[in-house]
Length: 339
Image (cartoon, rainbow, N blue to C red; front, side):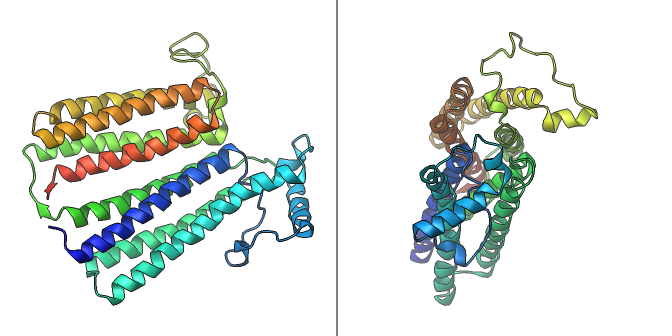
């Protein structure tokens, strides 16, 4: 049974998970509305205060005009339009600071109340350090767009997104450890564990190519499915030199890989679920849930592509990816632990 101390910690972790997922949602909207470069400096303390009057708004807008994103546009943006994109980036940064407080204050309380054992303290401090590093990564990513090329680096976007998913996954895993603390491995544990590890690996590979799609805006190209330019395997997949560069910067190959990694992940999850559903009712339900989520995710990805990357569909696709990851982690955890 879960004791009262753990119930309070689990409540804290659940709230943290909600806010972290909200952070990813806001980050997705910020990217898709091209709001990420609207704040051209990083002030961890004084940056919590937005412009307070029209004079300050004009000053911020003039700073934005000095950078290539504005200069390479048609330069017809009004200050009202600037305030809209500023809002999303400001909200994203404020949420980041709030998450810091959401960790520090409850952690200090639980620590002083002696609710935390040494192992849990180490895990939580690691998550906090990773979150601090994530804040730096966010600015490092934005900085890549404040140069001659007004687009953020798709490599930095991937690292930033990866770190966010890792933080969410770690918080969720800590929660599972608190909920299920009695070891009871199922039969064929190592077989199923390897299969789930393969699925998780494919998931993060898919995450990488999803970030590349977003950073390079490759989703705006070849908006047909399943064919690209009328072919299953189109021409032009390996046009860059050296050869390996195609896997990281060739827009067509990146979209091609993203499509078929998604289908491959769906197939292996189908296979895992078919194998697990015969064990007992609990795994049968988990299997059906996982199959439903990955099927919806693939379908939503296709719709996002064919819609020319609708903001609503693209953000939904990203949030559903988080749910898919959490359900994979839940399945991995549950094959080795029982309540």
